Each structure stands twice: as structure tokens, then as C-alpha cells.
Image 1 (spheres, rainbow, N blue to C red):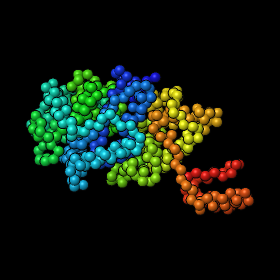
Image 2: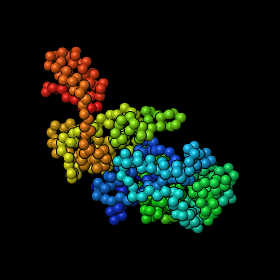
Image 3: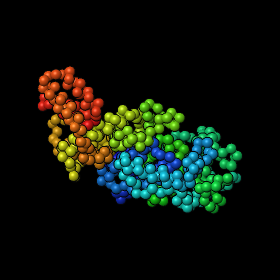
Image 4: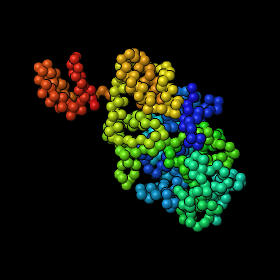
Length: 454
């Protein structure tokens, strides 16, 4: 079986291809001027799910994820986001970049996302970009404008718009990121590959076209083709990058290679939080650190994402995170009781769901049903959970947390057991309420009461 995943370019599920058993993957990485919020992390998890499923199918993965630490302009085209944050925090822009890059890697580790083979930085790949820009100029796909910036000639690429559906002749002046008033461009939809420094004093480099800095889009073309040997089997990013970033990247890369440089374009959908788009103005931007601070296992966020199809918009809430936290605790306890499996056998149902466009919600539903299936043996359950967890990444074999029960709660449990024996149900209910308010979960059965930490 082979993983089939929805390709935005062809608008249909397509099988992932490989060369000599190796799948090359490129995932658009973070702009490291702030912490990644949970919506960003959902996209980064998508690349991890794809890579894990490919490995489960018996192939190898070579994945690259870039670090954008220069050249990412604000919507108003006034200032690089790195420099804006540098002014706010009053520290060097490269120090800003390293600070948030470190925090990005920390978040990935907390979400159990397997590291890429390489995380090239834009600031350390300037020569790569110079080489590509020079070649684009030689091929007639780019030109030096009157403002000494280098622009990609959008009209030189006949297939522009096939990812997003935006026709070049329908784009209006001022479309996202590339509005220039002075008429330096030949065509209003052209975009900058290299920007002249102008009054900018920081984060600038010498180039064949004078001092300046790279445009945002050129870095991904340069890095993906260089580090993945000229061809990408799977390119991953958030749906917001479909246009203009991925349209521009495709035009640049294909103009260099002369063929389709990417086999599949895979996009993860938007994330809402409690019914609203996350934004600073709404005050609902949630970070992974916020989840941890509230006492939740960070993998509870991972489980929330898994319960939703990657290309469906999802609505995250504190309630859903709390429920996922309880599910993970329960599953770890159950797995420990069933017996840990060192080398799990293939579970055909799990593999089929995953290879059908990463249907992780069906996998979760399958595991929930198997958990309650009285006809399934502990060995069957342990094997299925262990096999699925190779992709789910919920660390289900981790030993359940053991917390010492304080003596006052022990005494309340004994008192409640006595009240139940005396059929004093009112007192039993009072004690249950006291125990639950202290963080215990109480269960009653014919064999007596049992408890667990919430």
C-alpha cells in the first residue's frame, strides 16, 4: 500500500512518489520573530504525520524545513518583521531570530514532532539565492527594475495560478505583499527576488545588484532545490501560503528546472480557537506554553489535531484539550495494563485509514472502539495501539503518572467506604463531592469504590 494524499495542484488525492525508496519533503518553516501559535503548530504536525506514515509504509524520508529569519515583509510592505520585533524588544535582530528559533524547536520536541534532517536559515543561504536569481535573469524570467530591485517576470511563466486558481490577468495592483507605487516593475503582479537596501541599515548583504536583502519567496525555491537534489516529492504548508507564496515559489523553481519541481502540494487548513480566528486584537492567541501552564500534557494538543482531518477547518477549545488530556492518561494506563509491545505487527485497519489521505479521525475512532471491545484480547489491543502510535506519536507506552495520595484523602476514602457499607448514601455523596473537588475521579461498582487522579 502507498500513501495517497490530497494534492492542491491537481485537486485530487494522489499517491506519493519516491526515488530509490526515498521521499523528499519540504515544509515551509516559521518566521522566527515571535512564538509559533497552535495554528502554526498544526501545519508543522502535518508534515510529521506524512513523514511518519511514509516510514510506516516502508519508505525513507528526507525532509527539509526552512527558517525564515530575513526578508519576510509585513502586509504594508514597510518593514521586515525581524526588524520590527528587534525594535520592540530592543535587541539585535539576529538575536531575536535565534531566540524564537530555539523556542520553535522546543515546541516541536514537546509535540513529539520528529526533527527534519536540516533546518537551513535564510540568512545563511544568501549565496544560494544569488545563484538562482542570476540564473532566472539569464533565462529571461527576471529583470532588474528601475529601483535596483530584482523582480520575477510573472508573465514569463505560463502556468501561474494553477495552485490557487488565481489567474494572472485577474490580479489587481496591490495584491498581497508586493505593492509598489513608483512603477519600477514591468507588470503589477511581478514580485521582488532581491530588494535594494535603500535606507535599511541592518540585515543587508552585498549582491551583484548592489546592497540589499532577499525577497520572501526566493528562499524556499533556493533551499528546496539545493538540499533536496532538484526535486521535491511532497511540499507542505498552511493553506494561507497557497497564494501568493507557493504560486510564486512554483513559478521560480519551475523556471529553473524546466519541469514541475514539486510532485504534490499539500496544505493544512485554518485553525479557530473557541469559534474565532486567533489574533492579537481578539486576545485569543494560544501558545503551546499556555497549554502546558494549565497543567495539560502537550500531547493533548497533538491528539486534538489528530481528531480532525488535516484539510478541514477545526475549532480548538480548552474543553477539547482537557478531554484529550484525560484520554491520553486513560490510554497510557490501559496500555500499561495490556502489556507493552516491543515490535508491533501491522494493523491493516490503521494502515488503510492512514494511507487514505491521513484519515487520523478514523484511526482514533477505531482505537476507541477497540478499547471497549470485550471480544478483543489484551494482546490485540496492545498491538493495535502500539502500531498506531508510530504515527499518532502520543507516547502511549509512557508509564502512567504516579502521584502519592495524601493522608487526608486516604481518610476520606475510608470514611466513604464505611458510609457505603452502612448505606448512608447522603454521606457517601457528600464525601464523593469532597474527593472530586480535591482532584480525584471516583467510580463505584459491585466490588467497591475505585479512584484515579483527574
